[in-house]
Image 1 (tube, rainbow, N blue to C red):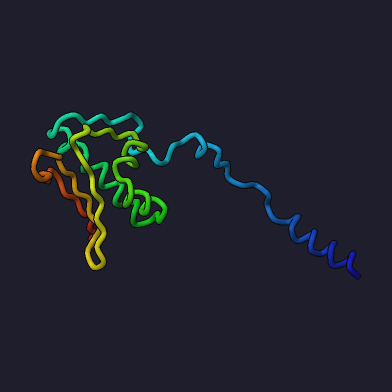
Image 2 (cartoon, rainbow, N blue to C red; image 1 turned 120 degrees about the vertical axis):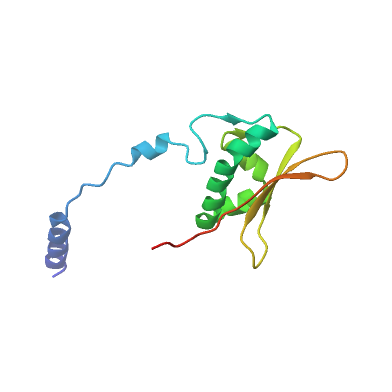
Length: 129
């Protein structure tokens, strides 16, 4: 009896196609990078021009990837560097997520007195028809 059941189950699995998509190309990609090339930002003008796009990508990823959210919350500058984005040492990045507000990233220039805000970015979803 057991052999008959085993044979019938085997015939069911043999009918299904065994082809699977090849995903080996994913191993060659570094999905944590923000760009194919390193981005080295040295001036405030470069930061204003290029960093919003990178931070937009990071904010979008925090919505869908909990591990990235936790890492970016704790170590935003290190995550940017691991992703190929390099900032001057006098620039700091802070990720803020308060209970009832949208997540945001604030970029500061460290100075002698208090830090000066250079850039603030929030990601807002908008539904359109």
